[in-house]
Image (cartoon, rainbow, N blue to C red; front, side, top):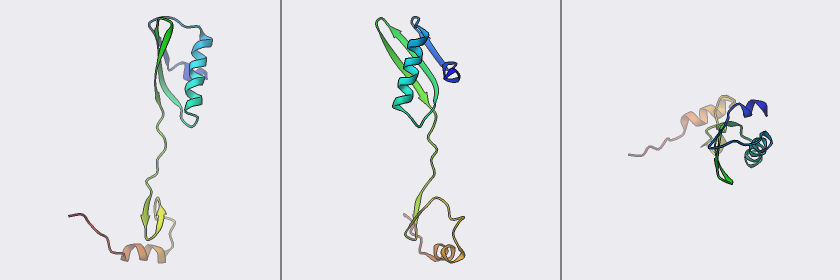
Length: 93
């Protein structure tokens, strides 16, 4: 949590460290599988505005080839690779 705290800035006022940690936990609970890259807490009187950037979600492109959903064909056997090579590929004009 200390590493995240270094990327948190408070503007427009001051907040106790306990409250800052509570906002960090709140964002982490709302986004359990993502890390906080940066966070800004803007103090506006009795309320605060939270702005934050989350780390990107790892994404693997998946496509349908010859009836299978695949990311890559590197684990296919020779027969399946030949089937993919020989299929009719349609193009948009």
